[in-house]
Length: 177
Image 1 (cartoon, helix red, strand yellow):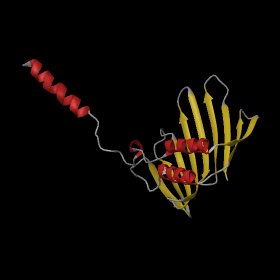
Image 2 (cartoon, helix red, strand yellow):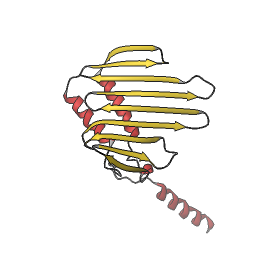
Image 3 (cartoon, rainbow, N blue to C red):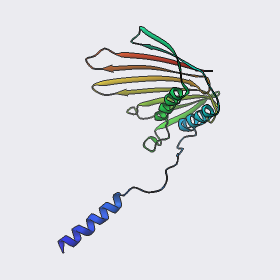
Image 4 (cartoon, rainbow, N blue to C red):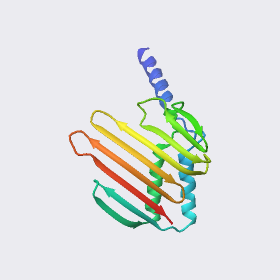
């Protein structure tokens, strides 16, 4: 009898833990989606030939200038998706305010790493997007500031400070032509 009950409970637990097989779609908790803007720009890149130049300054002294491929631009843009506020875990975690033609999304909870997103212009077709991300713990602090003008350029300023080591700084500016 005990074995039957244990077997029934085990079957119940396994079926309860089985993932839902529905296809996942982008859910919008907020009226702005970085994922949609990135996908739109990636689609535009597929249909156009571009020349991209990148300037990289790291450790406050080393400078590199180089031409980069469309694939490198696509990789950079895909990395911006991590800053989309439309994650289920972040639902109701941001306040929204509008000043002129700028919409600002600021985190309510201090523990969230994505602190602020500012969008200038239309939320679905913005003139520019600014992202402020800060992640802190006992051993590590990381800050990123991203300025993105879809179809034209993006810049990333990053500081990474690991306890007991020198802080690393990185500035990347990419122009699309």
